[in-house]
Amino acid sequence: MKRIFQLAFRGLTLRCPNCGGGGLFTSWFHLRQTCPTCGLRLERGEGEDYFLGAMMFNIVLAELVFGAGLVIWIVASWPNPPWDLLEYIGIPFMIVAPFLFYPVSKTVWLAFDVMFRPVRPEELHHAPHRG
Image (cartoon, rainbow, N blue to C red; front, side, top):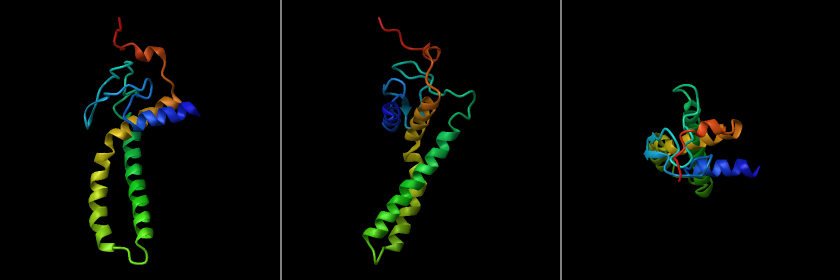
């Protein structure tokens, strides 16, 4: 159970699920090919559709955050929720949220993958040489 929380925490903090190293992204939208610390190939799938699950996770995360925020706001402002303001904030949030959660969705998806398919030593063959 401790390992599952460790992997999830590393994914949520944009770190390599295998070693905990950072620097997995060269920019907000560009993931490196390998972890700069342990050399894990970050796209572990067989094809370019490896991160399809990450895209789905991204959409679900954005919807959950929006739904939770909406419920909290309505309950906190009951009996007179500001419906117009909710609409003016909610629509732009749903457009921007997937972009905000993009890197997190990739690292969490990678952590999820590592939970079910643990890293094998041969996957780390590109690890930096330490002397």
